[in-house]
Image (tube, rainbow, N blue to C red):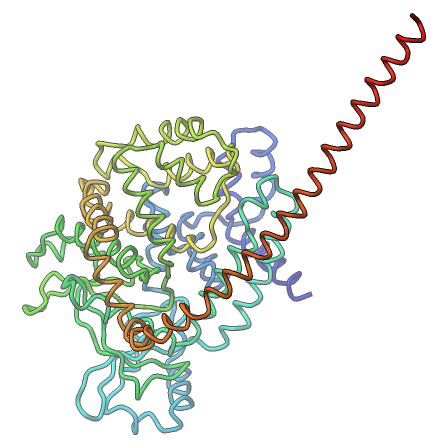
Length: 517
């Protein structure tokens, strides 16, 4: 019943804000245009369509807000008026009352607000779909940012995820592509990451890991977590001072090299993915600032670590080889990798898959980013994958989403940025590190503790092996000889029976001939 009422509410919001008109009006079929006019009777659709879409997503809840946040980065796929409105979802989601935030903080710490902070700004500095942020000062004078979870989030998310599971089941049963797309596994991945976002201690741990990983890169700043003040509903971190990356003109006026900033963003992304296998998976402009402090000028500032992605060593090596082959235009190797990984059936012809991939990708090389739509490339690859029954990999859904975010961000910063040429040297160096002497030394270093435990015991193990092995060999050899004797006897019996059969036939032939004669 809850799912039914939630589904009915979603339909009501869609009709109330005229979102059906946005979809149906794009079709030219007379019946659909008639349906558009019929469902629009009695509604006031004078409000701009982008505003109606934004308000509907806000009304439907956090999952739909996140969907709008991803869409807002794809200005190449959206009309400008809709993209501008959806951009407001990145950092201007309506806040919840400050007294509710204060009550949450006091409940989490078991103390009054004045005992925790020397000062606390009641007006939030930012409000997102899952939480909002207030600036404060600790009693020791440190300036901090306090992230407070929105109240009663879990029931709302569970309702929407329940509906998504039902719809995923329908898609899997009714669609010809259902099993290949693995919709239920994709929803399960989304479920996991959304519930992880509701635990701010987990988010703080994600931030600490990213901060440790990126310390030697020198391109990005990640706030320090103050663990004594972190709770599941409240997280206190170092206050970061920067300019939102969406304010490009302000950054340019302050002397920031915008093209270099775009290249640095690509480097940060590929470093997190291929070197660390642990990456920030919610990199929309609302979560990224740029430092203008003299000591860290022009560095990225990453915020909001509720969603991170992880890749295994196998995933990283497979993806890196795919990217490297794409950059070399070695489409045959790309096809072979898809077959080797089991993403396509083993009986797929390599030459056919190679030809299909070449037809999709070749037209997009040697172009600046402003002329390349990764969304269109992915859509064409998806159409091609249907022909070859390519299975969707749920563990890579976050990576695909983040890659789209990076492309959208790069397009905003520098339309002339060539994503391929920027990433190619990094991936080639990474591949060299994977197969070169550095990898051997790294593996020896990782295995050194195990070797240190085995070396003292090696003489004893060798002595035991030499003492026991002859007996084992004699036992195995005796069993082999016995089996060989049984086999020889069986073969002799078969030969004798065959010879007797032939001799009998010969005798019968002779007897018949004698009688006739």
